[in-house]
Length: 111
Image (cartoon, rainbow, N blue to C red):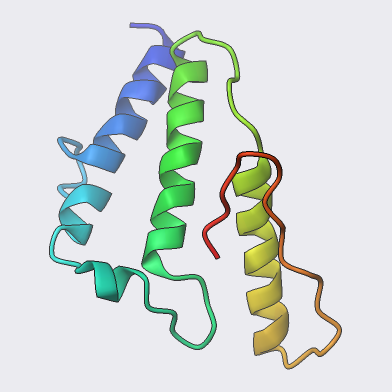
């Protein structure tokens, strides 16, 4: 197995289970209700938003590591990065905050 295929396999295992860490996102989120997942705490991103963006990134990265082309739009990743920036600046009690990302075309941003 080449290095890209091995990394791709490991990413999927960490995400969906069967990896050497004995922990994965799927099992950790199994008992989280939809109401809990969509609840924001202290204005930070909720579990549903973070999980969506992580899944999106893993899908694209896995395809690339398996030798495929990059097929995706970075709007969700850019939106997540902007959300993290806003969250950190709010925790620092800054008032001059950037605007959250807006949906582009048919893309939906979960904020």
